[in-house]
Length: 292
Image (cartoon, rainbow, N blue to C red; front, side):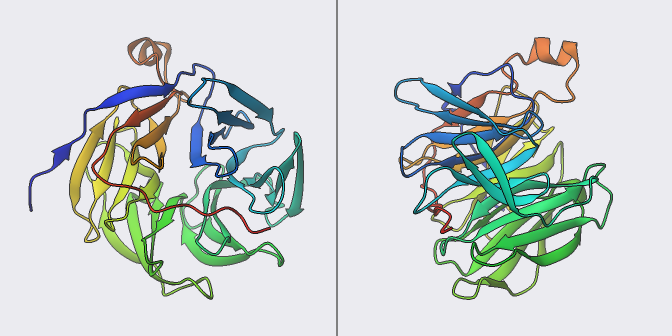
């Protein structure tokens, strides 16, 4: 195994001491803003990084992830009850695939053909209750994988032949062959089991076929190569980084959480809940907008 690079050119992109579980960062191609959510707070943040201006939308329910829409206003959203839309501050669930009160949607992302993928989990993280869903916009969503615990970060390589998926509390990183035209998976295969502190949370894929995974509880983001080997680390000044997304210039934006930290933890890590940015030596695979 070769040397592991440490990325240290890190700064605070968005300072926040109110977001409980910052998650799901994505850049909106319509506005250039960084969009992210507070899952438990039921909030969508839109940040103009050039001016510092922030727009806050209260969703009213738990929200795992949102996605910019390609042809309409507002966002597609993976919320507690299923998939829907957030438009002008109003949340509408149009695919109520999770009527059970013990289940909720978690992290999600849009593939290159505009389909919205999201994981769901039991509120108490019961093993085997996690599922991976795909919403094609004009049809009800489908379950493409089940038997998971907490399906979390996901993404695709640059030529759309491989999908990566983190199952946080199983401490597993999966890969699967992917057919971009049909949206079908070849079957999830364990790429690696994560070791050390923290569990794998949200992730972003770069143009070199590697992926960057926030290690919740581990105070770092790790870069894995396509074989599942750690080749890079980004130390962050908070214990609970949650997810990450690339800007167009190759900088990586990292969300974080305050939820579950004690008063003493927060005194040591007062930036918990903020968004950080670090310079990298690569660029991210572009993330598409939702086609519905």
